[in-house]
Length: 390
Ligand SMILES: [Zn+2]
Image (cartoon, rainbow, N blue to C red):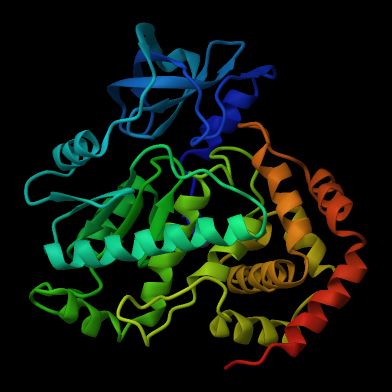
């Protein structure tokens, strides 16, 4: 699960027809000018002032901007009050400043915890923030190493990555509802492409009166919720992928690819204290769902509709099957067609922002790399049949 926030307003910007792409993906930023922008925020209906770089500028004066916290702002010309160069180069906030900004935004009771690559702002105990930070760091190391071994040397994120962890599910839900809408408020967490933040709640406090006091207690408590540990890893995978040059925020990244990858990485491992050990363990839950889907209701053109459009991901009754099929496809491509997958993903990574491909183009780009869809269907089915839940 990830949320892009106000997608409709970026599509609105696109209607200006001619777009000038200025910035590259985060992580590959060259020196760029910084601007002080004042605009009316269409989410809060209040005036916002941010220091930002311009990623895309439309001929009508609308902009897609990225501020120093890594948040994206899609600003239509009627809402843009001023855009003034600061005569400085654009630079992301360092970890201390980002921690301060998050604390100021979230209010009393929140503390910031730093790890080498993350800033975790939370109102839960130090022990849980430390546990989740360790998990993020292990995942990021393993993720970049997996792709390096596959021949793709991705960049470490150029800026500290933000995470917000609430003490209770209720606090999380209230924030999530305002930030991203009802579809994420009842989930254990989400990654927002708009704000670039992972938002979670403390699994070790859920259902308890008090937070865990030390790491050992956190580990004992989360051991009873492996599927929620999987959600943390899943959302953290999205965040890394969108910050290392693999995916580009507000560009056309097919859902099957982004979600399939996150599921490929998410498999929990309860034998370790962190609840997660390594990338690429067999995802037994998704395999079970996919087998049930193929046995009972999978349509003949399922692979094609998965690749061409996202309708099945938006329909709650079909979403679990679309996720399971995405996992199956990525599991097959990662294990049997890895070089071609890297080539395909590098093409996706180079897509311009604010341009969404149609189904025919998506299909053509997929088959140009992987070959005929019927052959892939047969190979993928054979791959899945061979898998054994261990
Ligand atoms: Zn996801």
